[in-house]
Amino acid sequence: MRIEEDVKLDFKDVLIRPKRSTLTSRKEVDISREYKFRWSGKTFKGVPIIAANMDGVGTMDMAKAFMRDGNGLTVALHKHYALDELVDFYTKKTAAAVWYSIGMTPDDEKKLDAFVKKNPGVVEKLCVDVANGYSEGFVDFVKKIRAKHPTLTIMAGNVVTGEMVEQLILAGVDVVKVGIGPGSVCTTRKMTGIGYPQLSAVIECADAAHGLGGLICADGGCTVPGDIAKAFGGGADFVMLGGMLAGHDQAEEKIVEVNGKKYVAFYGMSSDTAMKRHKGGVAEYRASEGKTVKIPHKGDVSASLQDILGGLRSACTYVGARKLKELSKRTTFIRVSQQLNTVFGNE
Ligand code: 5GP
Picture 1: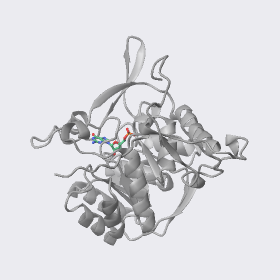
Picture 2 (picture 1 turned 180 degrees about the horizontal axis):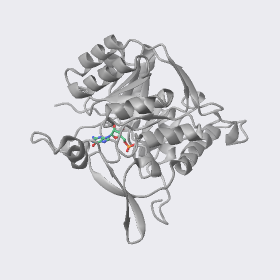
Picture 3 (picture 1 turned 90 degrees about the vertical axis):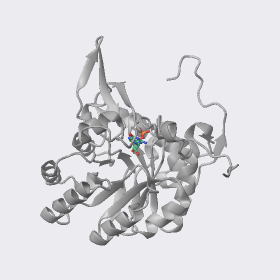
């Protein structure tokens, strides 16, 4: 047994120090980024915020809303669309706005192969998502996918430490997804005791990735727009959002009414709910590592996004970053013991 004494930080442990700035309005801030991916050689230009590949968030309706609003965000589609639905969806010139998601199962791989065979060159971006990116075989799986699809932009994870980020990038990953345990409907930390404070994971993993010309996506744990600014400030190239984008019209979920109030169910992708829905039940050898919650229906996603993107622009203004690209260079985190004044509640 060993104890690491360094303090590791979560979003709640820090604030960003304001800096003198010549910017007069948040309208002057450009929150889009341009990246050239290390392996695929493709470029990305847009707002580097990704809707998580979860039921209720990574939906085709979400992608349609993002395209309708022209906001430059992308959606990692959840894994449970049928091949026909995916083929039909991709014919509508949606490829730039979405990440096709797979896990490590032979079924997912077969579905991707079938898709690519039918529609060569159509999928641009792939998200290979497993709960535990440290499992043996994951690196080999990624290598195999890279060898099969040399021009595909591959995002893969999740991991939380620099050495694993490096290994994945060298294995062919363009964007490493970072985060174990911080998610809003994740119970991994509770069930297993495993995890890593998310802001430190982002800072350390970004450093490792950038040293090799790779990128990272901070996945999980953002609860308010300020957390997104902290993730970018810490060096994240992309930020993935689940809970913050859940509960909208675009969830493709039933809206239920309780005592005159509208709610939408939201659940972790390894929760009982997800396993019952997609796999016919929780396998005996594994515990559920996600929970199911009922969240107030939030209407169309564009209103929430106005808040989220407005908060990010404002953060850039406070530190004098004219572009999102400058935010991390201009970020000084200060450690705090309190974030919010809660005298009138926690909102
Ligand atoms: P959020 O933005 O809601 O805090 O976090 C979203 C992320 O939580 C997802 O992108 C995914 O990485 C993670 N996640 C989703 N479902 C589950 C689950 O059932 N268990 C765990 N451990 N993590 C989950």
